[in-house]
Every structure is written in structure tokens, then in C-alpha cells.
Image (cartoon, rainbow, N blue to C red; front, side):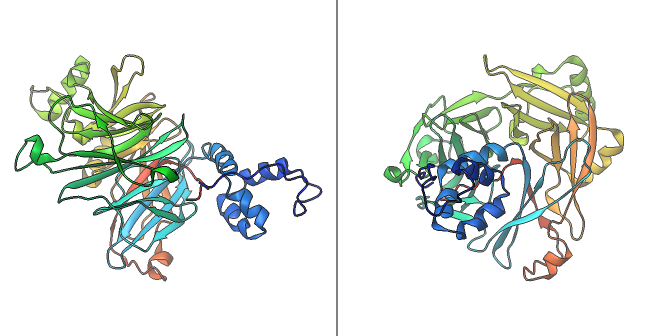
Length: 408
């Protein structure tokens, strides 16, 4: 996030005489991120170009056309967190190869929400950090004062002002008392890269009832951070205005008669009233807020919101009978939607010496498929200097990850 140097480099004595500066800039923006970062050592001029916001913005435009999957797991014994990434599978691809991007050796940070333009929000206790796996940098933010409260942090991006902000929500869980005084809820905001605002500040919460007492998931779409609260509400934090408001989650009565009959069979009950919102995952459905959930691993559902009137639409898809027993065994979750428009399902366990399997379902074509990701903590990685052993690990997977050469 350093100021951009001038791109008029034609008269610089260190510039190549036979390559125009604009062409050099365009070539750099199309190189692999690893090469760009290594080329910082060539000269002071190249260092300033590579560290400039102009190049970071140009690289990000190209990087968005190459979405990746982000994988992360932690090793408690060594207090390390490992981050891998792999290209998202195309519709005809059955395998992709993962790459080890970063090892965080300072603290075992937790990651609760998906990346935003390649940046990842991490938390541990009262500590909040933003990590860039591409540059292998970690930006630690000022600690917050918890006062024994639970803390949730989510990263967002405002495309209008071109700003990244972190939302921090703190409150007691409310088990002892549901009064506002005992919950002590606070909403704090931190702006990345703003020298005038290097501290947390309180933001406005549009109160439509009692404060909420839990936060599930998190996703940033078109300048808004969305997360699930309670059973029937979704919170939206507007990154630009820094205001939090609540919207209603979709209701079960939106299902058609055929799907209701299926659900009655699965539940063995005719008492179908409302969606259990805290069990489904928020997703980015073609630029719109959406959510996915399933019923007994037999019926998959995708919800998405129309932008004009904030109404909800729903699509359903039957899980093939041969997959149902598998899903009951591995109990997959749905972290989101990939560039093909398919929703992915993954297990939360990285099994020893086995490729990581991803399951995709297409709500339009009503089709399912599976693909593998190889190279995540394989035998060489496990037995080598990292020494993470052969035990299964808890795995987090996020789609839509992109490389970003922005430096903190």
C-alpha cells in the first residue's frame, strides 16, 4: 500500500533502452506472482515498480481471471498454520496440483471467513491480523479490549473508495442473560493502509431489536460484508458507510410443493416452518448474496437474493442415491461457488496420504461430479522439515481465491 511511483521511466538511466516503460510495466503485470516478487532484487527501479499500487492493481485485474482454491490447516504441536492453493477445477478437469504458499510460524491464527481479493483475515484471542499468502506478509492490527467477550473479525473491500476495512464485533454470548447491558455488544472498524486512521473506531449499528449473540460465516460481496446471526437474520456491514443493518433470511414457505413433500419425507414430519439459517453457508452467486444448505444429504438447496427488491429465489437439486451414503460418512460442508457456477462440497478433514476430494453440483444441470487436489501435505511435506506427522488434520477450503501482490 505504498504510493505509486511515476510510470514515465523513459529517461531513467536504469531503464532498458529497447523496451518502452509501459511495455515493461505490462509484461511485469502478467508474470507469475512468485517471479514478480523475486524480481524486486534486480534494481531500485524495479523494486519501486513492483511495490507500486499501479502494478498491484494491474496484476489483480489479470489475477481475477485465474481463480484458485485456498486450503489451510494448523499443527498445534509446532504452532504453525499452513496455507496451500490450487487452480479451481474446470468442468472437464479431474485433478489439480496444490502449491504450498505460506507457513505462519508466529501464532496459530484462526480463519473464519473466505479471502477478499487474496487477503485473509485471521484471529486469535484479542489479536487480529490480515495475511497475504502471495507476498507471505502478515499485518497485525492493534489488539482490541475483549473484557471476556467473544470476538469476531471479518475483512471487507469497498470498490468505490478502493479501501480494505476490518469489521470487529464483540459481545457476550447471552447465555446468562439476554439483556442488552449484559451482552455489551460493540462494532469496531479498522481501515488498512490509512495513516490517519491507525486505530479501531466505533461504528453505527441499525438496531431493530435485541443485540445478537453469535456470528456465523462471512463473505464480502459488492462492498458489503454479510454474516449469519441467530436463526432468521443476516447482518450486512456496508464497507463504505460503515453501518451495520439486518436483513431477513429466506423462509421455508418459498419452497414449491414438490420440494416440501421431499423434505417431509426426509424429516418424517409435516412440521416444516422455517429454514435453520445458522446451518447454511453464505456464498457469492454470480455477484449476488446467496446461501447453500442440505437436508439429510438428500436435497441440496441454493438461495440467492435479487438486488432490486431484496427478495429471495431458491433452487433445489436431488443428491444422487449413490452419493448419499458417502455424504453421510464424510459430512461435507459447502464453502461456496466456483467460477463454473457449480457449488462445491468438501470434507473438513485432510486424511493422511490421500488426495483431497472436492464434490461439485450444478444447480442448473442437476448434475454432480468430483475432482481431486493432489500435493497438499503429501508424504514428503509431512516427513520433511515441517514434521506434521501422519495424523488427519482439520482442513478449511475456500473458493474464489486470487493472487495479490499488494504489499503492506
